[in-house]
Length: 287
Image (cartoon, rainbow, N blue to C red; front, top):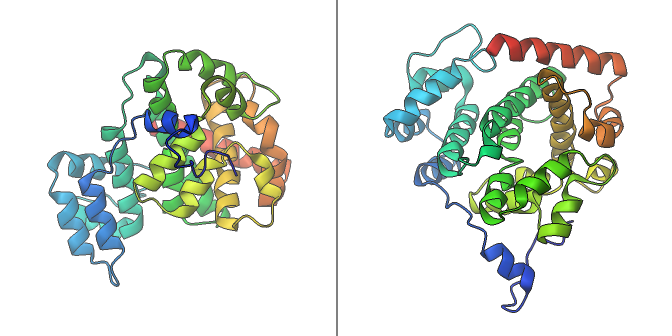
C-alpha cells in the first residue's frame, strides 16, 4: 500500500504537513443526508426522493442524467421518484454523488477543460462493463469511475508546476503513472483521491481502489479483495475505450496493465475488441 495511504500524524512529518496544505473539499451536506438514509436499516425511496428534491438544480441535472442511454434505457423518468423506481436507490445515489462532486471540486484550470467529461464517460463505461460482464456492482463501478482521478484537480490547485507533471506522467511508458508525481511533489493523485473518498464517506472498496488504480500488480494479488481488483480491471478496460474514442494512437495504461486485467476478467483478445467496439458506439450515440 502507498506510503501515503495512512498519513502519519506527527506534527514534524513533512508529508503530513504537505497533505494538510492540500485543500480537500468538505463532504456536501446533501451527500451526508443521502448516505445517512442509505445506511439506515431500511432505506426509504420516498425519503431519498425528498432529499434530492430539496435542491431543484440537482434534481433537474439528475433526471437528465438518469434518462441518458447509458442509464435510463427505453423508459424515461419524469420525476425523481420515477428515476428511483427505474434505476434503484443505489444507482440514483451514485449519480447524485457524481453531480455533487462536479459542484464541489474545482476544475477551472485550463488543463481540466474536459476533466468531468472524461470522468463521466469512464463512469458510464464502467457501468456498462459491470453489467455486461456481471462483475461487481454497477453503482460502485460508477462512483469509482467518477472519483478515481479527483486528486488531479486538487494537486493542480496546490502545485503551480503540476500541469507539466501531469503531461509527463501521461507519456510515461514504463513506470507507474504515480511515480513521477511522488518524485516531484512527494504525493500523488491516487493518494489524494483516496483521502477525499474517505473524507466523503465513500465505500472502503472505492477508496482502496482509488489508492491503487495505477498499481496493476494488485490485480494478481490474491490477498486483495475481489471488489477492489474488479474495479481496477474494469477501469483499465474503460480507459482503453476512452483512448480509442478520443482518437489517441496508444493506450499507455492498458499497455502497462492490460494483460493483467484481461487475465483477471478472463477475457480473450477478441472479447476485449468486441467490448471496446460496443463502448465506442455507445459513446458516439451519447454524444
